[in-house]
Length: 67
Image (cartoon, rainbow, N blue to C red):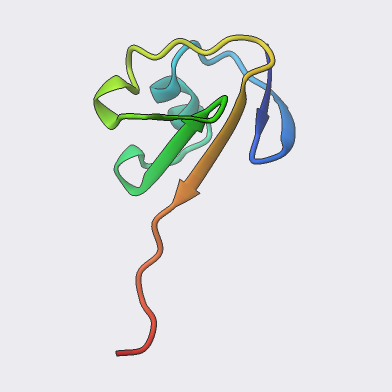
């Protein structure tokens, strides 16, 4: 299926958010995921089904900065 991930069109075989993160080699604990403007809870990554054309934003948590 075709997904839009962070603005890029990507072909994917993933059926769930969890499978997509695995496919992209992204550690689930270090990101927030939004599907079609809805933030997906980490507990729902395995059950939230993706559909062709979904718009997904994956945001990495970044630490650091000045103290």
